[in-house]
Structures are given as structure tokens and as C-alpha cells.
Amino acid sequence: ETGVTQTPRHLVMGMTNKKSLKCEQHLGHNAMYWYKQSAKKPLELMFVYNFKEQTENNSVPSRFSPECPNSSHLFLHLHTLQPEDSALYLCASSQDADTGELFFGEGSRLTVL
Amino acid sequence: TQLLEQSPQFLSIQEGENLTVYCNSSSVFSSLQWYRQEPGEGPVLLVTVVTGGEVKKLKRLTFQFGDARKDSSLHITAAQPGDTGLYLCAGAVSGGSNYKLTFGKGTLLTVNP
Image (cartoon, rainbow over all chains, first blue to last red):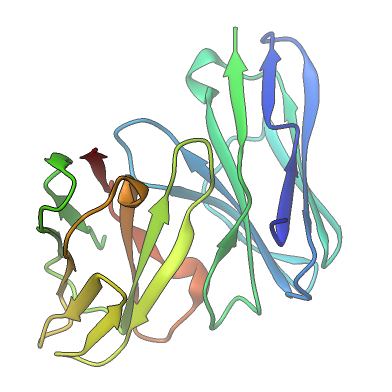
């Protein structure tokens, strides 16, 4: 059992659909992150939440909308995506956003048709 | 912009062989982390190195942080099929804010039985 759980593991959606990715961490951490992993590119940081407050939005298009209702849960709402948004979306947590090491979930593989 | 270059990009070896992968940058990092990502999984932290010249060993894996804290290497002795995966290095800038980690593209290692 991993400390960071992501659902769904796989998602196929059309460009006009609305869907959400969910992440839950059971580690008692205070910081949570969304990363995008595409082939042949480094991991790209998308959003950071520290103590439920968004502290980083790395110039992410508005078709990606994060939500952090509490320190244990993080969502990524998806709307009107493009085929180039197809990627593995990784959630991670750490003790806080200033120190510590990242604990990743298994990822949600997104395909946009 | 800090960039981390990892080499080689791909490596395929036979079980029992030794190998070294590299992580290089022109920037100085306050610490550097190595992760391993197995197929279909999220990255898992292997080690964090902090001091220039530091060497850390994890069973058959030896990690070294360069004296100038700009580069790092990972040496695996007597590789096993279970070592197969994507090896990612990530550097943290001085100040230590976790969300300012910079990831390399990774080295994809395949160990054949």
C-alpha cells in the first residue's frame, strides 16, 4: 500500500469532456503537488499546495483547475483539454513545501482524444 | 533556468554488469535527490545528498555528489533485473524550497537476465 493514492489510474476523455483526477495522502504531510510527466521531457511542476493554500502555479493553462479541500486531498479538474495534454499526471506530497522529500503516487495516465 | 542533464539517456545491460549514470548541471544545488521509477509506477526516492563530495551507499548502489555540488553520479554494482527502471535526479536550489526541485529527463535502465 502506497502512502499516496491516485485515482483513476487510467483516463480517456474527449476534448469537450469534464473529468477530475483525485489524490489522497495518508502520510500526514502538509504539502501536495501536481506534476506532469511527458515522454522525453523532465517532470514538470504544475501546482503546489502548502497547508491547503496554493503557493505555486507554474503557468498552467486554465483548462487545468486544482482544488485542495484539506491537507490530505488534492484534485485536478480537467476541462476542454487538448491532445497534447495527454501524459502521466503525478501527485506527490512532502512534509511541507520548504524542506523534505517527495512521495509520489502511481500516477494517472491521461489520454485526450 | 537550472537544467539537469542526465546521461546516458538509455542503457541496456546484462545481469551482473556494473554501470554508472550521470547527472550534470552548470548550476549549484543545495541538495540533490535520486529517484527510481518502475514501469507503471510513480518515482520512489532512493537517496538525498547534501554535502559536496558526499558518498552514500544503498546496498549495491553508490551515489556521489560532486565537490562543487553541480553534478552527481549513481554507480550500480552487479546489476539485477529488479534494478530496471527510469532513474531521475532532482536538484534543489539554495534556500531549499521543495517545490523548486529541478528534474532531469532521466536514464532508462534495462537489465536483461
